[in-house]
Image (cartoon, rainbow, N blue to C red):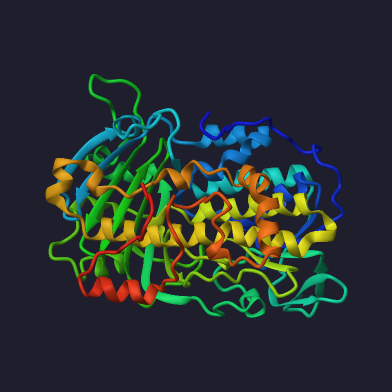
Length: 494
């Protein structure tokens, strides 16, 4: 199973009570992972969530191998993750107008040709509802308390008492030894940590939908086109991901045995929101999708959109935030993780991955440092994570450019010229193992006053040979508008 990593599993009960009281704000992947990993590490955990329930809606996203290595400690989750994962899947690539450029090729074959282990892919496309339900069941098994309808409007810390806390919309105050802000790009914790308070509108959004495949029964030919892939010579149908690449845009479609999923990147239309419950109708998509493309979109994709049931299409607005090394409050009692600390483009394939890595790393650092060193552990965690995330964010823009400005001539020669880069430094990483390996050196170098970007004694978890250079999204966008290619920087990004 590809999520298993080296080392012995250490299930719940393997660590003594740390005495650390942890308050998690938010029930996204970062928050839920932080909750269960903190519990496993011996910390006391409770969760606040602004909504009436955990939102399990959504469609698909990419979950990197580095984000699943901790499943080895959770046998129930490991088993369920394996059951819901796409096995023996295929990939096909089209121009946005429907011309097939790269015929269906098995993922395992692509990995083998790239010199990688076909049985250990860098990650897997997953169904958001299935993964969230898996997490919810694990949180329930652990009995971690979740208080719903608690919208956090302010974060604070008491340096004298060594506590962090939040104030909710109804005036309640909640405090803990450490508060983990996992409440997304709009987190109010930004004000306290001193980072960029507001995330910027990207001007882009994603139409995304998932629905029962039976809705395609009314058009048999269309259902045949979007069916699961049947290998040459016959055999059992297998999942396939189809990608359409166009100038400044792209779309993806996944067929599972009972579900059809499609997503499309587009310019904002005015109806988008950063919400998994905000929907638009298919006529709005069809009315806007051909804007700014030289040829109309593939007719098959348009027909698929027409058959999408009402109140199914989510128009999800995309925000971004410049890389910022300030994730923690002055006293180290409030810490941002996931999108609250760093936002990712969907093309990066890294948003969910890095959010989970954050949670695993932080829980481990708190356990290593113990109750008397919570601020130190929080700062060490940030130091371990910032440059890695800044590199992964930049890689997202590189991959977006690849998808939205494809060199079709080279892609026909070698399909790898039309697929996003998934470097080894991303997916081979084990955030828990890394925390235990480098914690002491990181803390020592902090005490010695070595700046994070001059600390070359700690083994990198980012591209080997890379030296951090501050960069801004505005500069990247200006370069792209000027027709320039994105420069990743020095080091081995392969």
